[in-house]
Every structure is written in C-alpha cells, then in structure tokens.
Amino acid sequence: MAFYTTTPTACLSRCSASEGTLLPSPAFRALKLPRLRPLIWPWEKVKMGSLMVSPMGFGTWAWGNQLLWGYQKEMDGDLQAVFNLAVENGINLFDTADSYGTGRLNGQSEKLLGKFIREFPGREGVRDGIVIATKFAAYPWRLTPGQFVKACESSLERLEIEKIGIAQLHWSTANYAPLQELALWDGLVAMYEKVIWIYPVVVGLVRAVGVSNYGPKQLVKIHNYLKTRGVTLSSAQVQFSLLSMGEKQMQIKDICDSLGIRLISYSPLGLGMLTGKYTASNLPRGPRALLFGQILPGLEPLLHSLREIAERRSKTIPQVAINWCICKGTIPIPGVKTVKQVEENLGALGWRLSSDEICQLEYAAQESPRKMIQNIFQTN
Image (cartoon, rainbow, N blue to C red; front, top):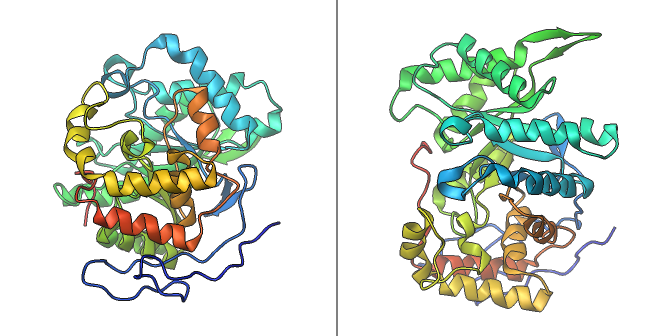
C-alpha cells in the first residue's frame, strides 16, 4: 500500500516544518496537523468501538424530509439506486434517526433503509455487513429507560432488521432539562443490555452506542458514566467541517482521540455551502437560502483554496472538503440523494491531502469571516 512520506513544510509562513505543530500567531489559532496515514479506499474498514465500518458513511436526513430537502415518494426508486451503488462500492455505514421524515412521513428514512437493505441485489454477506446508525430523539415524554427501549424496538420494526448497529442519543437535554439527562444515559444502557430471542439465536437490540451533538463537557461525563455501567461509548457525532472547526469542535475531536471514541462528522459540506455550487447570487431554494445568504459572501478565501487544490489534484471541491474530514481522523457522513452525488463523494476516498494543503485550507477557513451556525442542541 502506498504511503505519503514527505515531511510537512512551512505553509503560508505560519505552519512549522515539524509535523503536528504550528508557529504561534495572534491572527491564527494553532491547529494540530494529523499524522500522515496510508491511503484508504472505500472497501477498507476503520474501527468504531467493536464495529468495523467504511471510512465514510452516508447520511439519510433527506430521505423523507419534504420541508428542507424536497423529498417525494417518487424518489424512492432513485434512492434505492443510490443505496445500491454505495454498498457495491464498499460503503457499509448509513446514518439515520427515528425523527427523520416530516409530518406523516416521520420515520420514513428508517423505513426506506430497511426496504433498500432487503431489496439490495448483491450477496447476502454484503447485506449482513451493513451498519445502521440511528439516533433517538430526546422527546420530553421519554423519561425512563423503558421508553427508550420501546423507541429502539419501534426503529427495529421500521427497519425490519434484527439488530441496530449503533444506537445514538440525538441530543443532550443538559441545557434545558438536566433531570432528563440520566434517563437518556440509562436508556442507552438498557438498549445495549436487552436481549431478545430470534430463532435460532439470542441477540441484543444494539451492537454499540453513541451520542450526537454532545459538547466536550457532557461527552466526558457520559463516557465516564457508561464506563461505570460496563458499556463502551463508540462514537460521537457532531457538526464538523471546514466551516465548523471552532475551538469547541476541536476540543471534542481531541477528547474523542484521547478516549478512543470515533468522531462522526455530519454536514461535512456545510449543508452544501462547501460544494462550490452556490454563490451569494445563486442560492438554494427553501429555508437554506437565508442561512446561505448570510454566510456565503464571506467564504471566498476558503472556496478559493478549495478550488485551487481541487484543480491541482484533479478533484472536485466537495471531494477536497470531505477528504479534509477524513484526514482529521473523522468519519464524514455527507447526505446523498442522487447517484451523481454518490459517485462524487466516493471520489473523496483513495487519496489524502498533504500537510501543506491541510494547513492552507485551515488558514483560509480562519480568514473567512463567517462560520457555520452551530446546532442549538449541542451542549457545552
């Protein structure tokens, strides 16, 4: 397997020639450069707790969401093709949630994923290797571990699978309902510990547990609590991209690295702002337009660097942005709705940005005056 062996050199006069360090500057916060790793292909797998998953997964927020993503039932055939192409090319991680889908379509994303797994035309062994990571909403009426077990059983019914790969808390209630927080944690434990009889074997409801939108303090707390209960926290999912690399996000990344938690980066393309497709005069339709109109005018330094590296590498802007997430040691889960998007996202694998390129992108991100608004549910 090929390895990069070059020594990182100075980048924009601010990066040290020594790997992993940066010269101090009042205008540029020090960012750790990753250790250079082997090239990684989609059919290779990385460790997430006790699971082995593809180095990139796909998010399915759009599968059933009419309000933000314009889902229509007529899209289901195309979405099956999207799923099939991803799995055929080694992707085995799919992220969803019990709240994905709008109105009467609530839970539609899980239903579609289950249907696509059953109708996947490939080998059964490939289907068996698919890891579904679903998230459970911290609804105010979910106040006991038993209610989370019921929520998990409902997801299993929609998915029509025997066991969920990763059960994740969708968000923490520490900011507004701290008394509910322990119920969430005990709910994860209950899901993990409950076993059911499915002839001819006994299986648990979930293979691993994770969290989403947990800030650094709460992440450490739940990790330590689960450890006392004999349960490993396998993953932490947060908004993480070149638009979301502020101090708190980097703290979360450091904590994950130190505790052996795999960071899953959602919105690696900033809801589409890092695709190069949109400009201040060409905004997407729907609710995203307001957010894009506020942020895009200040993104030119970052988009320019992404474009420059993409042209030099014969890649696309989204491929460069996703590859940055991979180089930081995270598993990005870009959303996909079309075969073209799957094909493009797969092009983010099989190569790595150099340390100089990573430094260039992060400096450009620092220089861009506008950043992505953080999820209001993310805790401290």
